[in-house]
Length: 605
Ligand code: X8Z
Ligand code: ZN
Image (cartoon, rainbow, N blue to C red; front, side, top):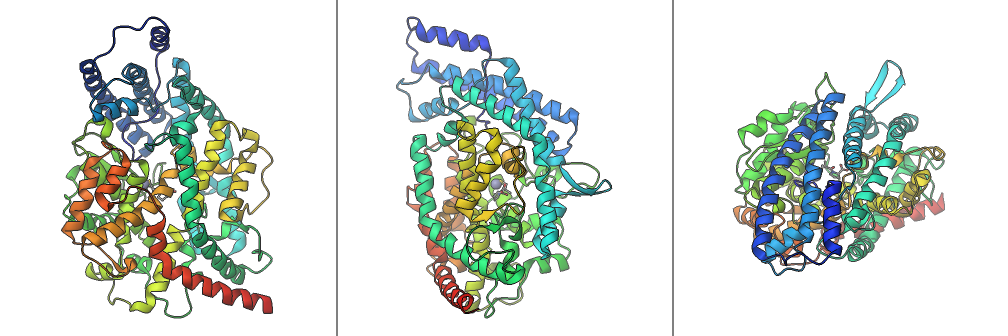
């Protein structure tokens, strides 16, 4: 997980009762600013200690999935929940009191959490969370009792095979696993909402939308505004992709209009279409360079992949990764046990115990992901000196955007500099490169938006458990233009749960925001470096000035409202799709030309 303080908390029934009574009775002596400061100091010290303990237990729970480690992880999560719940209720006393801005911000942050009145419910909540995490990590598809595949192997088939039946088998096989924890998820949602209501929120989705320094309704409107801004680019990319998939799989599988079956996009969730690049690449001017091939041929191991990424950050003037990072991280999939392979970055304490857990393979995709993970790590390291409650991203989208910003600087000229490419391609390769990048950066937009649109409706009760799949696929069709490759499983299916972040209950709007922010950050860093050419050819590798600018923002952590952090790096104070659109503008023109040609050819045939 990339987020330090857990937003979820709980509270002993007695503490809640005491607080409510106080609220109704004649107010106790007016709290003073000095009391508030003491309260914050005590609370931060306590939460820091309990958070370190729960992180350590969660690390073990995700690295060695057994019933015992699951029990240990939920025990420590529960202890943290108890303390953070007490803190949330305790903080209410200081609402409205005149305090220094930073203290007022801490009082506000402490209250954005769940609070459980009933200790039994708190325990159950923590257990369900640990159990769903374990269930996702252990899930396998067995075509026969002795032929079982883990998610990673199935993803590899989706990435490389063009055999439609095989793709469908992988897709359906993986999506048959999540119904086993649907009941757990349903119970978990109900409990979570109870916790939100204890704290005065309508439901958990409202808490999630309240974490962006603006009212929750304003945040939902911002998401919609941003989506409308970038939708035309997505539509052009989908249209082009449709023609190419039609040519590959035939008109019976890929219709000319209407939703496309979602198992054909090279990815289990069709959120990243990079693996379709060989099918989609322009016939002229396309670079034949294949980073995956180079990494495979050189037998680049997981440590070396990580070293490449570290090298980028140190070139910006950042520190080397601490020795403990190398000793304690998990970089490859163990052969002898179940682990949660979904890549994650962890701060284990407020010093420099930072780690990643990732099953690295020598592919271009993992080359990007490792830069992403180290973005979290360098953010953790940059804000260690902040007080506990500010040891976090300016908002969660910032946390997700840092490593991706750095990865936008993985250009041919950079790859040549580090010896992974012999010859830089000429400008005719710009469109192919932009297309390749759009297959991850543009394709994810409607996915990222609609995952949380689905959860907002689940948490609000608008979508009932029997309609989970119905609503999931309505959203997939409306936003992504996709459909389920096989009929929906009545009312017992749980396709959303086949995505890690749903099973692990990690909010997803962050990736949507990060997708916009990283282009704003990239543009700002390139300007800082004095670069004036096209943004797709800019790499800030080795540029200390750009590095200092980035570091300055990272060091703020969550101490200021995010618009101030954005201003510190870019001079802008709004998240905006404009930088992304500017980056891909030449591709948009090209896609629309191609689509006109392909549409005319389709009409003729
Ligand atoms: O979960 C991740 C990271 C860890 S925070 C690997 N990502 C999202 C996903 O895989 O669904 C990065 C891109 C989107
Ligand atoms: Zn991340």
